[in-house]
Picture 1 (cartoon, rainbow, N blue to C red):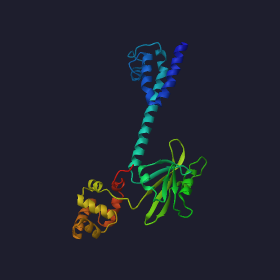
Picture 2: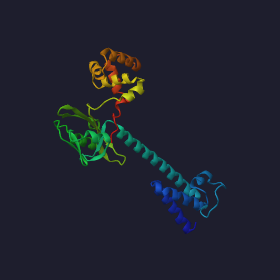
Picture 3: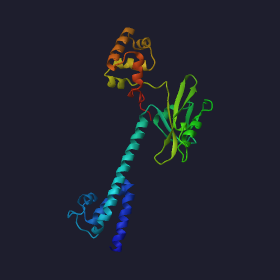
Picture 4: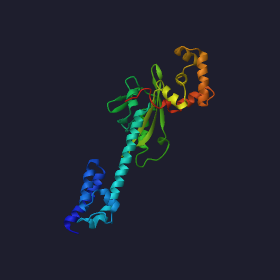
Length: 288
């Protein structure tokens, strides 16, 4: 093998793995590889390797050396594309949730926050997003957010022993004039291998079911869905009747139709079904 040919071989192999990581380099490299072997495309080399379908170029003698690298580079690109899609889907799903989700390091620096977090951790909240940090303004004894996040991160560090710290920890923070804010903290390992903590919080006063989703899930009429949604939000039959301008008997009739369509028998079962369904998964209006 000539020195120039050997240099070209090493150059192309090196560029293969570099281009596998950079989308904007891949197309040009494939053209260069095809040209080096007199083929129309890099894919043609894989399809016709060893046959007379590939025109003989000066470098075709080392085609068997290059092909395994080309195959591995293609596999690497496929895995990276899959991981990228999974990450994009994960972020899209988190941003669509009504639950506030925040990733924190041990210093409470925010590594990621979804749209709901920005709406929930505002100036009136016992947890507030202040620049790049999540600050706690209301205490609950020794169990603080900083304490729980620290435990969650430490249990993922090298040499840490498995134990109770790896289980999710929960905290209830009081709010003046409102129901308390509830949150849970769990260990979370980033794809880069960096340990952090994931914080998930919900405002019990804003968790509502979507009437539109209830209609689709259980084939309810708009009136039946409205009754179901109000019940799940804690309203009584009398409250629903007063707010909708109908009689209590009419509300009861809607409710019995809902029981039949949802295979439930009492209000508690229906409320549990609604809160366990996707009707409360998304916020009434998109956040973010």
